[in-house]
Image 1: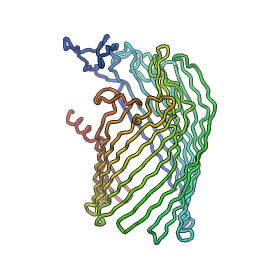
Image 2: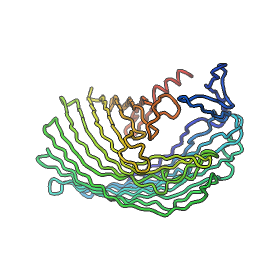
Image 3: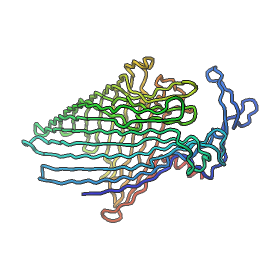
Image 4: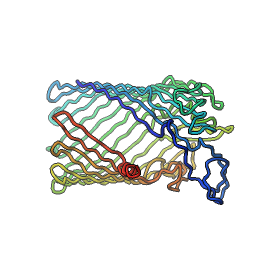
Length: 472
């Protein structure tokens, strides 16, 4: 039996105290002088546009200052060598999950009006799993159940009198709440045949999803207060796969499965606003996403030290999630929606090589060709690429597995440009709102001081970190 308590706190963005005066990189094309306020006129693809700038445009408050407390209790027992049971229950408390503070019009780095958004949240989840091995000499059976329930909402305070003082919220101007739950049963039978050369997997998962007590309320626009009917859905996802070891160094595999993903609470909840002219509505009728997937691949070992993997896959999605926006009576509205169909097809290539007994290297890549195949609500996006899905992804790394008590890794990741606009209009890179291609590197090293006690140090985004160190 194991009990784990994990407290954490993190901050994103700037601090609302000790701020420097904001710096603008906008310049007047005629005089070359820097522009920090006033009405700015510019041309976008031949169309004249105007924006109003104020000091608050450049100010950044405390963003996503969050606290999380995770409690996990796990129990595992072996009734016999061939029959085991494992159960876990976990509670995640994020009542102070995070908040955003932004300055309102007329505010300066010294103070002024502002807005605050909060996201209280808590989640219970549990799992019980049992394995019965060596049934009739060739069957390994896994069965169990999952449970997840999340409860939370959003709180907005759009009338802070001093945006640098996070203790002064002002009156509540918008809120939303709800409870989202998923109950699941699953089973899988692994059959090892032909002297362990052929392995068959057959299984399925039954999910029951429900959303209850959903409401939102706001003083922005005409949305007012709303309470929504409880909803639920049941879905069965079968799965089957075959793995054949053609030789000691070659394995062929193919699989077919269906999948069900229930919407999360943060996708369903709305009832909040970023400013006086915007409103994020709830999505009470958001549907679960479904997928039918198949893949085929080969694993090839060379000289017992190098593993090469190649996989081709196709995924067909229904009721995929996207965001719809519109303007009504001068207010910018947006909401998450599900609907339509899309498909993803592509391939994965990977290689791993054991350099020494304690050092290995790997590299892999994924290519994804996506297309929206049907959308009755927004037919003009049919034939377009799906949003937020890069076409190419590359990963590589060097792994130190165990050397004189040391363990560590250096890993890199590259992702190509992705579309944020469902009509694929955001083709320009290095501009605001663009999802550009990016490259990151991470590193981690750990040392086992004594048996059972290890210390570790890690750095994310190495190039960015080194750049900041050099600047300092």
